[in-house]
Amino acid sequence: MTGVMLELIVEFGVILISPIVFHYYLWKYKKLAPAVILKDFKIYACLYGLILIAAIFAIWKQY
Image (cartoon, rainbow, N blue to C red; front, side, top):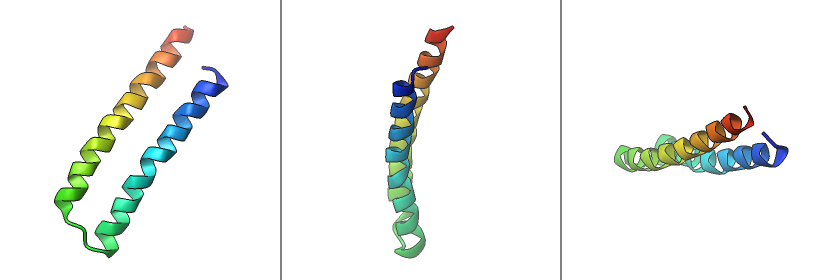
């Protein structure tokens, strides 16, 4: 895996984790409805799945 590919995976991972942390904060301290959190979790889980697939293909391509 090239450095550029690894950097992109890390950057997208950080970008995608920040809304989850923010929603946890809203849920814990601002009492956001759990239905909203679950909906957003499903969206971000799909995006993380796409990053995982891209990482698997990038590693698989090397071998």
